[in-house]
Amino acid sequence: MTREEVREVDRHAIEDLGIPGVVLMENAGRGAAEWLLEHRDRCGLGDGGRVGILCGKGNNAGDGFVVARHLALAGVEVVIGETVEPGELSDDAGVFRGVCAAMGLPLVAFGPPLELQAAMGQVDLWVDGLLGTGFRPPLGEELCGLMEAVRGAAELSGARLVALDCPSGMDVDTGVLAAGGLRADLTLTFVAPKAGFSAPEADLALGEVIVLGIGAPGGG
Image (cartoon, rainbow, N blue to C red; front, side, top):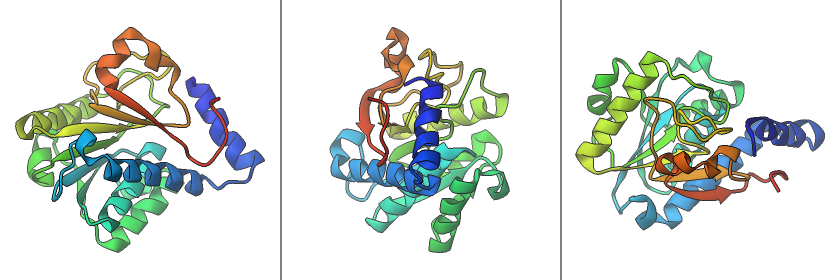
């Protein structure tokens, strides 16, 4: 699917079928969490591993908050890194951020990027919910610094990185990863592969691609 086709799937589900956006977000995040729990070896999440979940401000962040909740309910230690103030989140993402806060899950507000590793501590698996399919290059300086810190932390600990829907910094129409974008070991994409995933250069950023449903039709 192209970026516009992704939006049309969401619009059709919400406006024509009457499925609330929070339900779609819950289905996406729960499906991703269940996949991670069922395939611990493939994603690098061993018993007793700690998961760092990176959340931006769009719907991709909401998926991340849902993943965090379901992993925590399954007994996995999680820590959530936020790049924006709660008031800047999309409405649906804000709902699930509030649930995580009410559960007492650790929410770390990012300061300077180089302080990321110290703020979030030891992480055995990173989940990338920073930027979704709506992203268009280029990346801002602050996000580039943040992603560099994530890469450095992952390299030091040997942690793997799982992207939700697409790696942060990828243009899903072309498959081009913006300078400074995150390269995933595994991408859990929703509904259908994105148009740019077939580009030769996309493979280096996507890693293995798994398609998950969200309880709505679309994408062929």
